[in-house]
Length: 403
Ligand SMILES: *Cc1c(COP(=O)(O)O)cnc(C)c1O
Image (cartoon, rainbow, N blue to C red; front, top):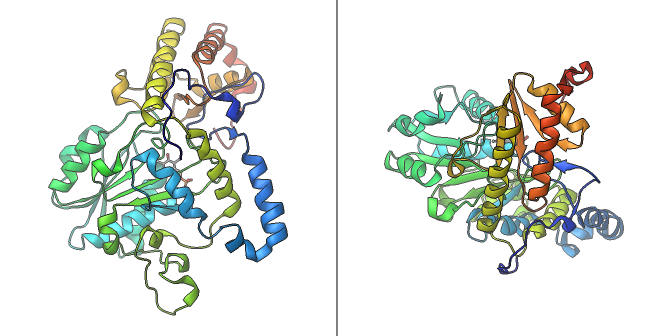
């Protein structure tokens, strides 16, 4: 990635994205928009590389190295050193890998600590792991505010998502990691709603593991591979529970016994999703020349403006996110009993946000392709939906599979 070019007006860079005409997209926290160049890149990967080079492309087109190339592009966005991030699989799988590795690092401790603001799959994966390894571990789930005090010397691993997917509430990563380490626990951060959204400094935090997905703020597209970070000094202690051949030190030696790679590559499992990775590789170029601090500054400006506009225009909505910007990620949520219906009415008017049960209307702010005029226009349309009660139209009450 090129060195950041400090200049005014670096946002938005809408010309780098394919945004449908008239759409105000406030859902980049769930699925980022299509970066220009991504479709061509995928087509090239399919027709030129796969189509023409066939199996040779693993070498000629650099497919085998692509997971690492992409990991190295994600690294500066989350404050990690080069070579410390492996990509592949889905986030759920990466959570499992991280927790399994953490438990093996603390064999005498039996508690995995998390909070009830975590995304369900992270908790499901931890429980599934406990069932697989003999059931004598405990997943302890407390309120987000109670996490720090719940870190005791029984805890093997603290597993938290930094930014709450519903409310945007943000944990203090450095402080909690420090607390975990003081108690002798391993720290795992899920950066699903942080990577590309807020500045993260994994190196400074000193956390052992971090995981995240790339289809949210990193714009890698539906099904884009996940990532996992392991602190470089502990890599030799990391025993992969999912020991796949591509995490082997010499995959093509085809040895019958597993011998892990001496780097983060040991957290790879099987054959990488090359088409998706090529898209992600292209998508990450949208971050060229900006720093996460630039993005944060713009994101706070957009979010504050949205809160101010919506609270003024829509008194029936209650802010569900922290009011203090420093405690909030890059999303703003409002509570409304008929939130599902209201979001459908908004989408019908080309303002795309989403809904999370039971009553959360969620709006994500992505300065790469959103400006203040979008935010004001979205709040005007929201005001109209609320004041005219347009959401009462029965067609908006029909629930789709994905909300
Ligand atoms: C989005 C998200 C997931 C999704 O996991 P997948 O395996 O990619 O479906 C998991 N955890 C958190 C915290 C998320 O925000």
